Length: 133
Image 1 (cartoon, rainbow, N blue to C red):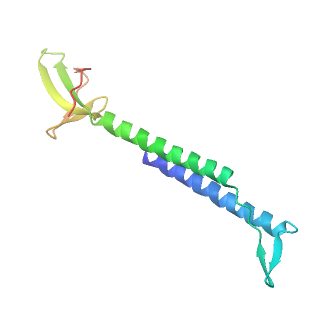
Image 2: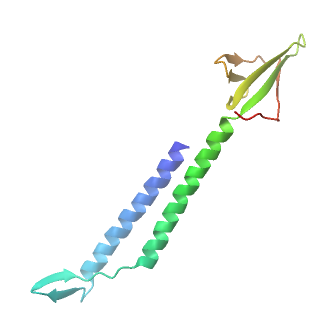
Image 3: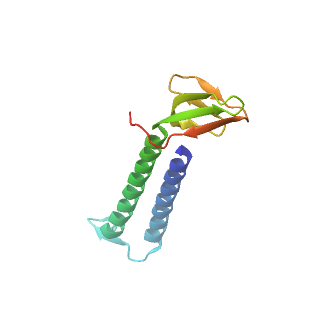
């Protein structure tokens, strides 16, 4: 997830650098881009707040969306779920509580910090009714 955010930020920064370099090249090559003022030459600047404002709005929306999705991922992975591990040979049932993000295909970490690794003969049931912290 962090890689996706860094990739997005690097693309945004690269696009901003590209646009700035392009604007500098255009202002240097345009005839009449300079005017005389008090014996000194200065480039004319035409602020384009519409385009800049739209670009800033897009960047802010992208960052807000990334932050919201990161929060959703974190919240979902920190939900406490109830697990029932059933031994197929004996039928013995063992109950555990774990965070949803800590459960993988054949192993999980309980809330107490115990790592449980299941054999091929064990069956795991996840209780869909989750309790909130």
